[in-house]
Image (cartoon, rainbow, N blue to C red; front, side, top):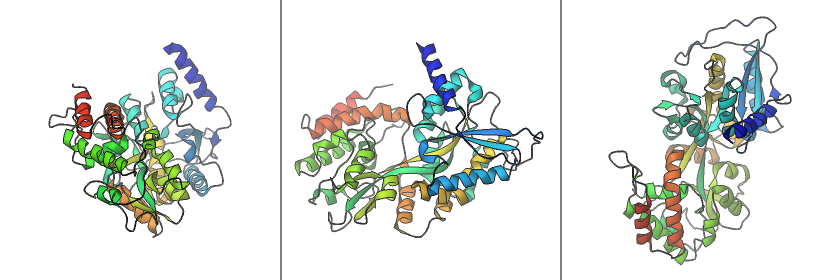
Length: 423
């Protein structure tokens, strides 16, 4: 069955690479001799033999189309071609899931046809962590890959690391934020008390299988997911505090049981934008694109201490582990695309957070820029897929048991601690 599945995945992969994929005009080429060297050198290209560079991106980053982001990306790729005669950049669009999705396509190519792996791939934090764990990514050299002048946000850089090294070159990020309608509160709610003393119902995605919202609240309450020896752990009292907040909000008619049906900020954000709810969690991208004037951002979600909680998820340029090793021109192209001079305006057009202060400095001075800076500097890096898989189901079950009244917050927290698998 595994062999058949690999063949089917490879067939989908190869069909996605068929003619019709976007290709930039043939153009020029300078390269770097190694990942650890920041100085480019020129590699000769035989006349009439274009060197092809293939990059995989998700649909949202496609250079095709008439939108500002697509136009900027297409122009940047064309400029790279023009600066490197003899190079042809090919862009393949990969979905976010399914056989032709980024993760499955990388896995299928790596297992069955490494020669069709891309030179460069745009991966989010979860995709990067999964590919790195499977040893399908070539690590960058810290000293040369991330210039200090880019002033990358610590959490975004941390989100691009794995195993102590830089697994992907950050160029953007996403984060969730808490927002509310101007009529909902007299002042921006920053604490649980602010929410509980108001009269406005709010919506959190408590049905998320990985329980990212509850995990963020738990960490903000002083909880830990690792003990002094590095073993997985849960703090009963910190979790009990979070669950008690949920129960109090439910008892006050402020946190509907339908929160259990929402698995991400995608749906809570839709409810917020459509006017079905007046306060709740929404991702930065839809907020930047569609928020009406009366929808105000708080930033990180309100917490017990008012410091806020949120996770940032980096977008990075990753180098798939090809049999021949990383193509030096791909290294140069990644830096070309991650450079704040380009990534700043591009992320603004995409509605993504810029990766650092230098890129943010290219944005106009307005409220959205201030919000982006706040999230980039205040959010914590998203925990690893392994940690989300380990803690998520336990925290989700605890939240549901407390919300429905099946267990008291204390009992639900105690059960969660006991449910954590021991090493």
